[in-house]
Length: 548
Picture 1 (cartoon, rainbow, N blue to C red):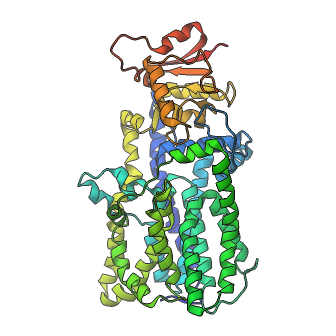
Picture 2 (picture 1 turned 180 degrees about the horizontal axis):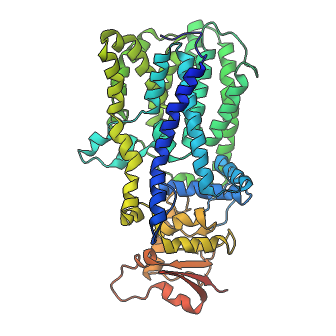
Picture 3 (picture 1 turned 90 degrees about the vertical axis):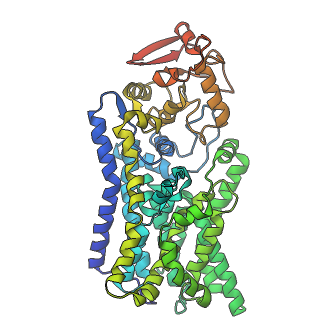
């Protein structure tokens, strides 16, 4: 049952939350401990520091690097062209400034922030449960089911469904534990959403009549909305849409404008609106950001796979959903129901960021699952049945958790597979990056294979011709140019300026030579570098510095 007096959390409860949250956080660290231990024993390869989605992880490290260099404006480091900056990705740039102050690397501050954000997320999820329920059992159920939420993707894999098509295998922001494994801004965003939800659950109760102020949560909503708008604005869209619908429905029911609720809602929309206006202006007037945004493809999975992606939760939540639709209580399930509906609609809007809207879906879904457990399933199944249902919910998704957290380690155990997954690089490339980091300028452009180019901005503080499918401007054309050059089909670099930039360094190693697949005896373009550059040998990798 919901309660109007809920929220107070005892010290005993907090000890339990931090004990369980600490164990879950440690689970996201164990694979890294394994990878680092393996890296210490390896002589011929280097672990690049990111296990979950290393392709995007490399861009986060590059953004932190901007802050370490003293920048406050974001520039695409994975593209060779000079371009105007923008005040986006401020979270990672701020982490860079923190790293500079405390004297740690971008990788260290990335994982420190991930741990802190994860503990924050777990504590806020319990706080939300405590705002809704007075008793410990539903609070713990909400915390446990939301923290461990995942799906039955492992079942789909048995039927040869691609892992990349499964939300619970490929959309970490949708699942708190997987989000904690991926990066720091996903758990931070989920934690902010949980606190915002707790605030609106409180202020939308019938007996709450206070105007928004500093001391009663008004300022908290404003700050959380601002942080969320800067860290992950997509997360505000479903919740904001639900709040708008809530106001409309309340106005129709009362036949009057719900002034108090409108003022509380404005505390979210004011900061979010300001950030939204800025983002629209940036997308309109900054050509580099326009191209970057147009290249992003975060498409949603098939509806059936999304349903499968939440395991047994939708089935368990069904009685609570039916009850909420029938009663549609203003002081009860209404906001959560609207949030769930708007979230599902947003996920399928034809938009290149649509999968990002899944980040908050787990909160209202688990809410209804717990309501169903307390008001329906536990009433019909007493004794052992009460324990078996939540246990079954967790056990059903454990194989998926094992795969999402553990499968990347196979790339560490098998270095060749790790190279294919962008988890590793040959150790000689790492030595090149260390040299580049201490020489030249951050504006220097490096020509290398795409996989090596992914990590150069993160660890060598240099730009690359191609490094990322989204963050390299005109990425398809750049990728083709890199392949053409290393295969000998088009040798226009580095003797001339290309599209407003020139290459200063060329890396030639095993991955670059592998791009030369021609069988007609054509000389690769890098064979002409001897007469126009100085060279440094790093084992099997040669670094050429172009003489101008």
